[in-house]
Image 1 (tube, helix red, strand yellow):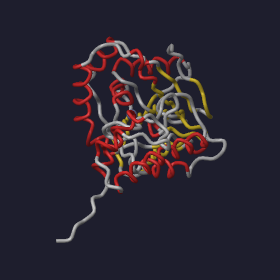
Image 2 (image 1 turned 90 degrees about the horizontal axis):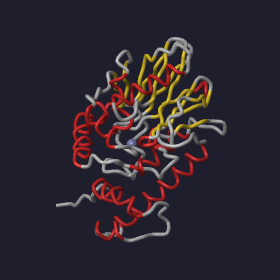
Image 3 (image 1 turned 90 degrees about the vertical axis):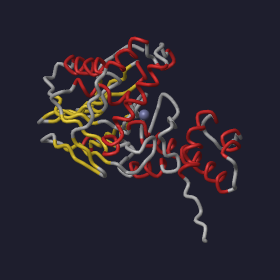
Length: 289
Ligand SMILES: [Zn+2]
């Protein structure tokens, strides 16, 4: 996949899809500035985004950056946007330093090419060289960026892919960025920091804002519609239902991660972290003494 730059998906709402980690970056234009949604995986990659914005030839000044969640492929490029205010959920602010160390340690241990994820060892060098810039403004539930002629709404509706995933909603354009709460080019990613039992409820909240004409940008892959988000929500709910059932029936964790079930919409190995996380997260029955 080559770098193809930004294209407009709704009124003055653009998206660019980049080959490394197949990640999406959004651009929302307004009278008094512009918002960039996610910044890719390194300082260098952030500067490439700025370059692609310049290539639009529209005299855009990026006044705000929004990080949809904490993961490096959405945050590390913040450094390139020195003149902009960076917004993210409070949990991103709280957790970023530790997550930067975690991800850099992983790449130091395995700095080779990742062809299946579209990155090379040169990209890894850039990730490791990046002095990560965290958010300037954080919020717990909601925030609004005023671009003069249009508001951009940031909403946290609960935990899911991580504990700090937010929705970026441009109501007048009927467009929404959902970060990795939804993925199009791959199955949703259940990692070691996911909240599998709460994820579907979070998506249900965001679905309230969507209609038949809405355009939704996933963290990875092509834009989707509300029906796609609904289907992925239902699949994620199926995962939670099977996990809850196993826990309630007293399965051991070892059995729960090993036993297939036809109702699971994703391959079992991709759900191992979700099952482990759920075992830590399911409230334990309180015992009387
Ligand atoms: Zn992610």
